[in-house]
Length: 451
Ligand code: NDP
Image (tube, rainbow, N blue to C red; front, side, top):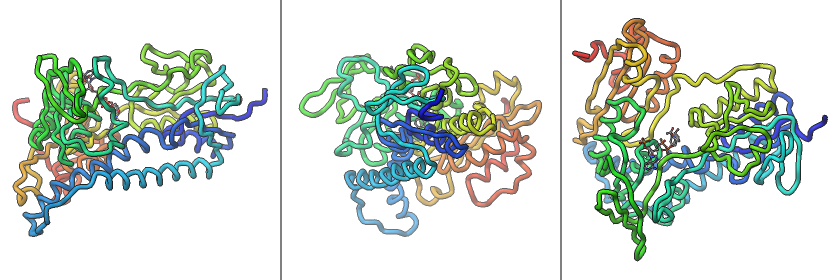
């Protein structure tokens, strides 16, 4: 049977665009449908604009710190509208760059919602088209719990377009998005409160990292309230009141809910096409990203495996090489690095101490906490944590963790060593670059005592 396209991609986020581009490069005829803006969550309303806001929010401290280094800085003024306008300009630029990437690759972009009619037919832009293969790369969307007044809360999507910087903000959640936005708002001058239902933020991260980060966030002026749940949100005279289940209330100007994201797969006709989903809408796939329908594949957040852009991009690349390039390979979802762009940031690769102990039994822990050199002059009390987790028997470094300035930049490089299964002794052979913070990773000689 002749099809209109070899491949129809639904979703022009990072993963879908990569898959489309590589498949087209292998000679496939490709169409990509996008109902929102090309670039997807990461580029339009996630990682990229978030990082720009993180940069913005650090300047307040930088101006203060400059004094110690001899600079006299007049009282700085911050203009939220200017920041948002400049950020929007950069996001527009990236949106065009992504479109031109697709065009140059020869993939057809259809700016419309697409729904599956059957295994080979897609309804898009008022017509039906057929494709031999269909790739679902629709990402995820913030999920809000049901509680009275939740309609007054915003999600990360809205944070990028607020008309003004809230004076007081309550952030609900203790994961990546909650803490990153808490850092942004706090850095820009909002009075910021984080409400987390558990014992300590960043569940799933290394225990030392969680403790250390929480202390640093509090030192920065963020109020972090653990074991705290919201009962309701009320709005009156433009302000919001968050009622907690312990009977207390907090008045604020915005409530940001960052309580997780769900696969964006509803009402897309997936079930009609024979694609199996779980109860929250996750598309079930095998290691090749193949769904229960043999010609339909899914990648990225809609498959809820490792919900990180670089992983999703790799899944898209592997799919396109495997199906259209005669170069089959699958993505290794083990030992991936990730970062939380808090202030200071967190970065991590491999096993936490807790997981390593469960997996390997005996482990050696190398840990240093210190005041970064820059702050010996500024008097700022911010500290840096670095930690290596080593399997005692093989001496392989199975995890590396850092909280501190430049942590994501440093851990990215260390991730190569962890992926190569470098031993502690091999890492020790690297000569330090002095004076840096990163040098601690190659100079930690003695495991933490009594562990
Ligand atoms: P996370 O799953 O990371 O965090 C959700 C947080 O909300 C957790 O602290 C969770 O608590 C809490 N929570 C969940 N449900 C409720 C509820 N009903 N009431 C109160 N609290 C609740 O999700 P995010 O939304 O922060 O991020 C989604 C994903 O996006 C991340 O997991 C990550 O994969 C990706 N991401 C990556 C970034 C990066 O690489 N820098 C940046 C942003 C997102 P508990 O711990 O108890 O479950």
